[in-house]
Amino acid sequence: MEVVDEKYITIEDVAKHYSVSISTVRSWMRADIIPALKIANVYRFKLSDVDAALKNYSKAKEIEEQKKDPRQLELDFNPDKDL
Image 1 (spheres, rainbow, N blue to C red):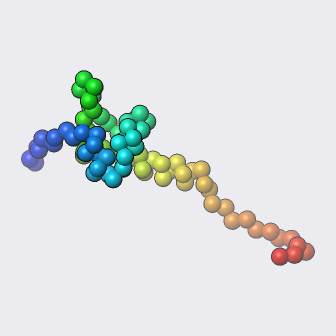
Image 2 (cartoon, rainbow, N blue to C red):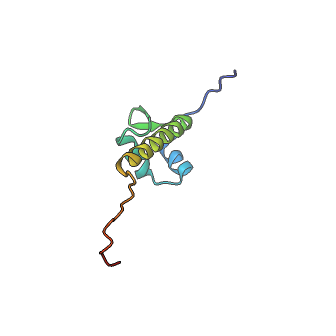
Image 3 (tube, rainbow, N blue to C red):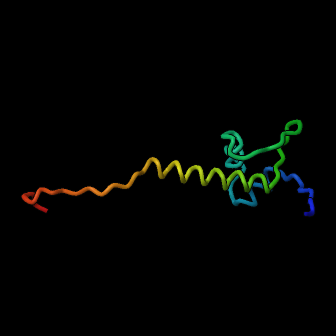
């Protein structure tokens, strides 16, 4: 298997790739949703790592939402009640 060195990209490139604002990327970082490498005062990202992190986050949120929203069927057996 060939190992390819993936380049680190800027926050602007991440925002452009996902069609979101830079503020959104920063909020993902603050919430520890995506990994970032900080060099001095500059953040850099590996796109493959960001992709994987967002997919995992999306799956986790979906599972969490399913737990919060149990779908139940409500039946009313009161025949005297007007519809």
